Image 1: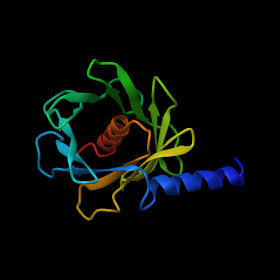
Image 2: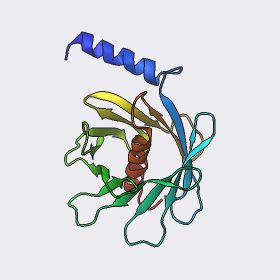
Image 3: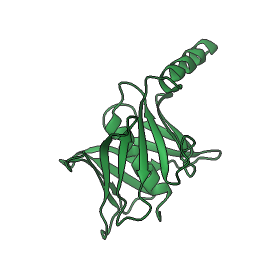
Length: 184
């Protein structure tokens, strides 16, 4: 990778993720006291666009991402009997959209892998515990998660690059959060 490629990538990131960038922005605000893991995902205008419905009292962690009317758009569920913690993201018909798991070796930063049956796999890296990380595909940033924009305790923002699968990227963010903070 040459300096020109690196410069082009940084320029693209500024255009997408800068202050007035083209990225779609969402806010995840978790309820401090709720049965299960229920919370809303709002767009930058404050409109509730998705609801994360945590299914309480199940053997496996199960989270449904729903539209505001309650229609299930995808299901996030822990996978048992795996060497590493992992969560599968499935569409309403049960077809796998992605498998999220922690990378085997991550010496300097927390790293997660997102295996997708179609398209390139994604990599998640940064400070997962502090909600400060990026999601990349083929070395290109497609999403950014940050808590620094908010003062509220369990609130963080997600930016999604134009043309990317918003629902899947938000579901990956929810899955990583659920695995990184299992007793929240």
